[in-house]
Image (cartoon, rainbow, N blue to C red; front, side, top):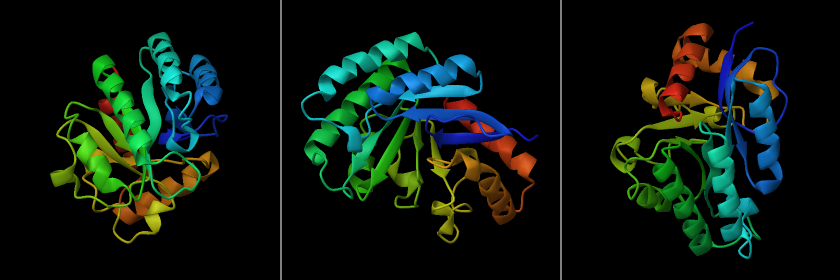
Length: 224
């Protein structure tokens, strides 16, 4: 069975054929689920962070202290999912989101951990913040091609991660440098085989070759 890497997913049992997985917690309630999966499966790298949808203006700063304890418990863990979102109603506005994101990224750089980043209609703002963290290792989840990565992303290690939804955009895969490419299932781990089948076809690669490329790219941004 092929080992299919997944650069961005959420706490759920592994599917048959799953390979290395970056499993993202989005709030303290599911950090422990990601931690348990990591403790039981060496293929899992847990990520702990506060997603903008889960950002509580009254408690997030306290939750950041808890986040640091999870990161020290798992020396190879990453930070996230965190980021910026101007799409969803009923969540804190960009000023609070930006403050929370910067604290996540400061922690990532200080502890030398990768971050996985969500962005919806705020790519320019995100690029401006990322410019402040040139040493950051990051996975840009749900990449839509909204930025010019060569000009607008920091010089550190970053991956552009694409799922089935993003693949509906013509040419999205071929626009990503091979050494920056990642593939993700997000909320749908069962879609991973179809994702690799379609991505390999679009890139004129063998599925095994593509899986090995993504696994190598994920390893490059992983904590040492």
